Length: 286
Length: 286
Image (tube, rainbow over all chains, first blue to last red; front, side):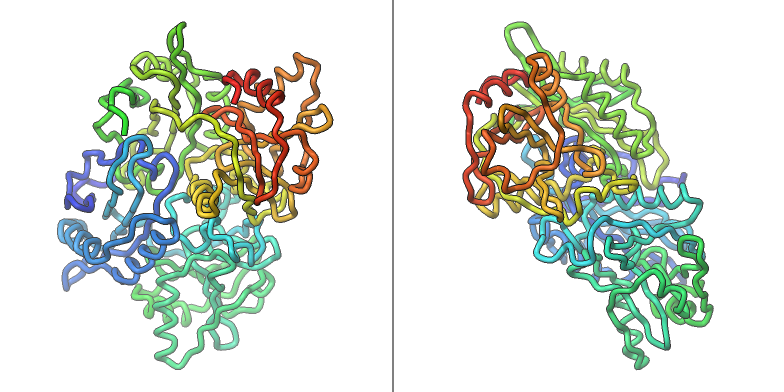
């Protein structure tokens, strides 16, 4: 799709490598079992040069994911250095996604853990989203005291997230929104949920729900606080989307995307709040 | 751990490659998102040469997994040929595991799908298992009409299975046994459950439960039928393990392993039935 010089591949302990030379062993546990963690952040080239948005917040979450999976600890400064090295080597324009991936290494041959930094053109920019509600088959508190379910851990075992996107496309819409078996909205396959109602901003709770703590939500929460706006964390039912001023799926890569339809029912769209949220999140308004 | 000539790596469309040259791109969707399927079968060298047990049954399941994930279809004869080529190149003794893995290819750079055959020394042979019951947070019918949950699909997104094994080890036992939120035994992270009671053999149902259809259970079922033994499929509660003549976690790689303890409570062990099941499954008796 893209010319290879718009992609960068770097390995922890080695630095930038040629993007077309495959670096991963066939028995890497990340490949054979999805047994590793990742994180993804936005890379932007503008008049001031290249920057990696919220690098340290993403690395902090990456470190929490690794700890939750009993992976070797993340050396944050080594990863920060490798990300900066990769970003400096990136020759693309506009925006890109920077992924960091950390695995245990070989399943059959003992190896050091494997750390990868990938920079590549990001997905198309944000569009208003029609979404399908897809149940997870779990209640909203299913992850309480169940660390083996890896709730809130950004593992590379994303097959279900990918399948949910495909199911949404099969239903003729743009994205999925997970719903617990007891009827609460959770998150998108690659995004968090934010809702505006009665002058307040809400998002869905992490912890017992298994929802991933969103870097973008954290950034929005801080901006909201600076503007004296409350940002609540609470369980939200699908029917409530009839009553909101707006709802969004937010992520570090795609930004703040308004949900305009859930399962065929319209959701209110507020250009004003969308613009505010996009600005707070560091993205141009939708 | 092992000398590399006891491992074989082969790529679909290429054949056997040097085992130490990494063939997988850093942005392979199998590596970045666990978005691929796999299967695993046993390779045995004995006086008659090298054989791959139940190759075609595993490839049939592999093809079903690929279809359920909207992966490109499995060319069964091409895979069978590649497996045989890899097995012929394998120089090890005794038993090994043969894994087949199929992914969509590159996330950022369009590529052909990637097919890998891996042969490597298998896990230690079967021992009596003390197991920990770990809930999945889902009811026993959560997968009904929910194809995005990928129930019964052998995806490479196995992080939760790996985490369950670690949780079991943390609790000082050998393996995990998943339990639905409505209180039914399901399967192990890499094995199926078989129970003997009142002269009958039982296993847990696939389909709505999300349990993977086990090749080993299919083989046992056929042998049981040949001996006029009924093999039922039904939901089983943990308390019932107090009443059984024996319970086993069975898999194509490890064989038929008796469960001797669940959450600290003893489970009856029958050497006689264990021996019969192991023989039927093609494994030496435990």
